Structure formats: C-alpha cells, structure tokens
Image 1 (tube, helix red, strand yellow):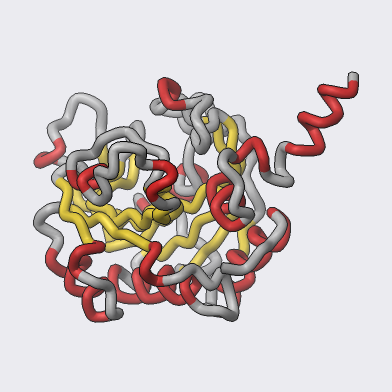
Image 2: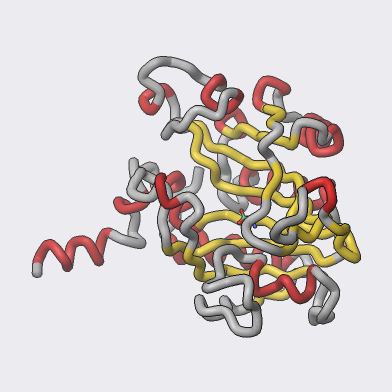
Length: 262
Ligand code: GLY
C-alpha cells in the first residue's frame, strides 16, 4: 500500500478518473440551493441529482468530485474511528454512460494497482445486493476469492429523496487486532458493528428515484442507468496511513495539536 498524505489521495483519485474521461467538478457548497428536500449536501451525488433525474444535461456523462458533506443519518456511530458528521466524499459518476462492469473494473484498478493506491488484494472484501449476480460475477471475474464476496439484502443505497439503487461496498480488513473475538468475515455477513472491516468505497448502481411515502418496490426508474460512488477521504486516509482513527491522520493532527497547545 502506498503511504500518501491526504492531498495526494484526493489528487490520485480525481486524476485517475480524469484519465478515464471524467470531468472534475468543484465541490458544491454545503448549503443546498433549489432543493427543498435537503438542508445540506450529504453525499457526492446530491448536487448532481438534476442530472440523474434528467432535468438538466451535464457537460460530460462522466463526472468526478470531492464533495464536502454533512451526514447525520449514522450519527450514532460518530466518534468511533471512522464516522464523521462533516467529511469529504470522493466520487465518480456516470449519467447514462458506463454501468456496473466498468465501474467495478475502475474501482478495482484504482485500489489495487501499484501505480495508484496499491492495496493487497487479499485485504479487500466486497458486499453485493443479495440478488445481484452481475456484480457478484464481475468481482469473481477480476480474480476476487468467492470467500471475500458477501451477499447482503441490505445493500441498497438511498438517503433522502433522489437517485438510489443496489450497491456494492468495498471493505479493507485491518486484521485480527481489531477483532478480539476472532469472528472474521462473520462480522460482514451478520452485519455486526466492528472496527476490523472498514468500508472504503461504495458503488451505487443508481436506477431508481426514491420518494418519501413511496414503497421501494414502487420507486420510478430513472431515465438511464447510472453510477454513483462514494469514497470517504478521511477513512481512506486513515487506512492508507495505517493509523487507528481518522483523527490520527494528517487531516486532523495539526488542528488537534494546535487546540492542545492553546
Ligand atoms: N452515494 C454513495 C455514498 O455516499 O456512499
């Protein structure tokens, strides 16, 4: 794995997707304009909803960004090693361009190639939506061990109203030191809260538009099949710098040091 500072991680991600035909979008403001369903941006995809629902046409069907976010739906976990209310979300997006195959291939290349992040393949685990054989088989075709792929009914990403769909999450195994009971992959299969497997990337296969008061099976299809991904910068930095918590990374250390001094 390559030791990198947080700026290098951000640049490596955005430049990889630029090399793969994406336009780098600046982060939108945290405060949301013209969307009564949101108080603030809570994911990379939220400022792009207008492209996913077809109400606006993007400059490029391939976009990438590092979006400032505030997320509170998992606030019970904030304060552990890797959950934050404010964070930066790296993401790559396809608006009716590539779909599952290419999204999964690019994610795997960026994570495992020595040219980029260089993760050891045996340290990565993948979850897929229970009935998503396409995603399951795609990971297998890249050489992933079947014992490292877990099917989960809960792998469906949605947050508020907007683009949503089945997803495939990528986890980094921090090892037995973070798993005192030695439960191993059961932690993922049984969705037990843990600090061993850290979710570093989520690939959402965005096909539906969620609406409050509408059941999931009745969500309308979006005009096209899209990709929406999220890789939390703070978590990725924590894992790549080999520290226990995001607060021990270069993103926070100087700030915490200054507070201590004061
Ligand atoms: N939109 C994908 C994520 O935030 O995980």
